Image 1 (cartoon, one colour):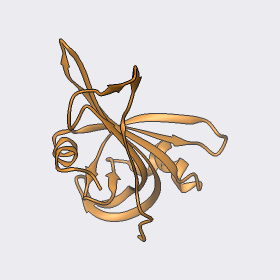
Image 2 (tube, rainbow, N blue to C red):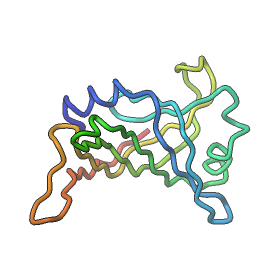
Image 3 (tube, rainbow, N blue to C red):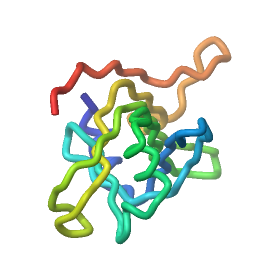
Length: 138
């Protein structure tokens, strides 16, 4: 569902921010490394089961947000971003941290700006590109 420019941008980035919610309703955001296989994002770590994000998903809070962003330029100010809302599950796979458990995030909605072309303001309002993802069966 991502364009070629968006896929190239995702491949060029190493860090993202992952938002999860605890069983008590407390949101938390963590900087994470990630992989994207064209359909799902994968977040791992050296001790993923010991982290808040893992515990939040394991407790049944599967709704997450992930943001990949940077500044292409500060003169002029040119931020770039891909934001994804999705559903996370714990899977075992071979990934950047070896064969272990990862959070697999299936996108449900994504927004992007500044990746395909510089920021677009229409009628004085910011207008990001929005994609509703089809339901994926995993």
